[in-house]
Structure formats: structure tokens, C-alpha cells
Length: 262
Image (cartoon, rainbow, N blue to C red; front, side):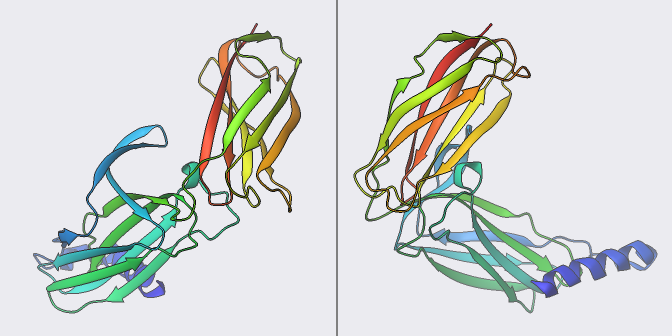
């Protein structure tokens, strides 16, 4: 990783100081071609947007790629980067799968096979996967990027959320207290999971209100018993609360509760 950063820094400085000495062809970017992959690419909604680069895996699976790297200039390095993107970003206490691999290259052409094992105890959820390529002059290929959805092989059942209060479409004023009462239940352990409480106001402004991790010893149910005071900064009009509950395997479910602030 240090070498990769150093190359970028050195070449940037060189080009800034001696641009007039640039030899024709040195600024040609390398290319990454995917010859084959073991998991087909699908389309899926993630983080409220549609992506057409999604790979679906289960813990214990092996993701295989055959890459072809080409360049008019000598190749330097390629980098594999996998990191979590839970809920459009991380929370978990369980194992978050990550890969950071930098490999040196020589010549102008390389066929590289990568086999990436998803750990059996990896957290379920969304991940980013990027492949980067650099030549010796610091030119970078167009990044190949995927979104990965991982399901747990032992537990793919999300928790259930049952809410007694607040009731849907209730009307509140600024400074009113909203009382939340309900039950989160699951087929397996909730321990090491959590629930989140958010609010989206009439101007589509999002507010994160609570993030509560289940206490040690929590089994298959957790009682929600909390309150929130409507802030004067929240826009008048129709909005909604969102409760999102995670279990130990990072499976999650959501419950939305529409309200009006007048």
C-alpha cells in the first residue's frame, strides 16, 4: 500500500515539474478486462439507488475472477479492495469481511486469477469491491467496481418489528414527546445486533435519533421503550420515523411510521 501511494505522489510531482519532458505515450492509461467471473452480475436496489453491478454471495462462498491487464507502458501494480457498506455505512460488532491486497506487476500484459473466500463468520450485508491498476508512470486504469451482497449461510431470517406506539399518521407539534413502544423478535440471537431510530422530515432531511446496541445476554427478543422530543428545527408537514433492527448475523428489517408535524 505504501508503494502504491508513493508512486502516485512521485509521479504527480514529476509531471508537475517536468511536463515538457513527457514522452509521447507515457500518459496512455492501462486497461482492465474481466475475462470471466464465477458469480453473475445482477441489478439490485442498495442505499435507495439501483445498481447493475451487484454480486450475491453466501458466507463460505469463493468469488473467482480472471482479469486481463494491458498497457502501452510497463505495468506497476494492481489492487483489490473489499470493505463493508452496511446500511450505507458500518455498525457491526461481528466480523466485517475486508480484503486489501496490492500486487506488483511487470511487463505490458498480465492474466491474473483471483480467488476470494468469504469467511464463514462474515457479517451479512452490503460490501464494496474495487479493482485498480497502475502503470509505472502513475497512470490509473478505469476502476472496476462491484457491490456485493452477502447472506449468512446459517441465518438468513431478518428480525421482526412490532410497534404499539406511536400510531401511524399521528399529529405532533414541536416540543411534543413521541413515545416508542414495541418488540423486536428473531429466530436466533439478537446479541451483538442493534436498532436504529431515524426521522425524515417534510423537506426530506434525515435525522439520526438513536442507535442502541442490544445488551449482553439478549436472546431472541428486545423491548423498545424510549421517547423522542420533536425538535423545533424539524420542518412542518408530513414525515416519517424509521426503525431498523439488526440481528447477530447482521440481517435487518425496517419499519416506517408516518406522522405529521403541525
